[in-house]
Length: 152
Image 1 (cartoon, one colour):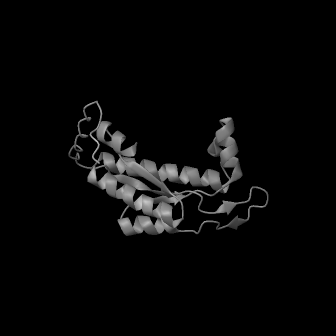
Image 2: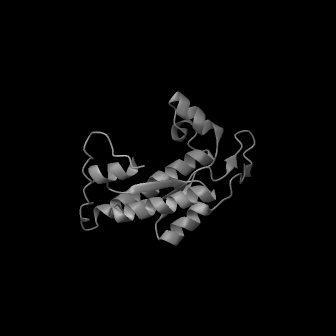
Image 3: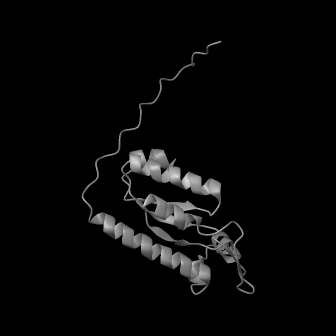
C-alpha cells in the first residue's frame, strides 16, 4: 500500500514507525530504502512500544528492548522523532475516540505524542523549503486480464 500511494499521490514525506524488535527494525530499514528510491523524504522514525508504562504506578519496563528505533535512525541518517510507550490508556482512547493527548496530556504517552507531532511538523516545515524533488517513476502498467500461462 505504501508503495502504491507513494507512486500515485503527492507525498510531502514519510514517517516510519517501528518497534524495538529486530524484525521491525529490519522492515524499517527497507521502508526508508523504498522511500529513498521513490524520492520521498523520510521525515523521521518513531519507535512504538518502546517500553511498558504502568498506568497504575508509573513504573517503566523494557519489554521488547529499547533504543532500536533511535539507532536505526542514526544509522540511516534520518531524524528520530521519539518513543511511544506501551500504555493501556492509548488503546482505550483509540476505542472511545478520546486521544491520549486530550485525555491525559501530561502522561508520559500524551507528552510523547505531542513531542513527536512537534518534531514531525518541524520536518514538514524543513521539507517545504527544499528544492522540488523529481517525480517518482510511474507504476508499471496493469497486466492484461485473462488466464496466465502455466508451464509444467
